[in-house]
Length: 220
Image (cartoon, rainbow, N blue to C red; front, side):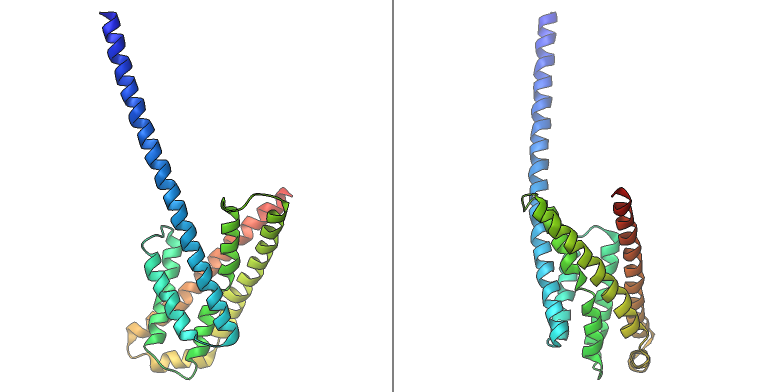
């Protein structure tokens, strides 16, 4: 009788182990697929960030490029989970939507300031891709990551904080344009909610970045 119970118990244990192993295999497969998808999206975002930088530096196709950024934000809603990135996409879409509905003599200039915030994303995404398992970890890759990190901080604070604040938020001509050309309260609040929302988010990110690098310096 004891042998029969022991055999039945062993059978159930084997079945349980088999099910757990299958679940783990499926979980690992999903994790690998999600990682691949994440890498593809990062490469697409990197290409868009580089295109934005080229448009900003050469003053061409600014509105077209901003629409591409907006389209990517809409598509990315299907994949992003971080609340700050969801907020980022909403703020950007609000500004792009407003600018597409208004033709002003400073339209390209305003869109240029908005697009310039994407330039720092080039270095952020470079670091993210270098940290992935795409490259063999060695001193050269580590040096590139450190150098890239310095560029990221510099460009981030310049374009997302200084440039954005002084050449967009503090520009009286731009504020007058928004005040005069907004057809109703919704449009008025749409552009300002987008502009100041993105700036506050950038301030929040700048604090997180500063704290992160302060901790790294303390470890050195």
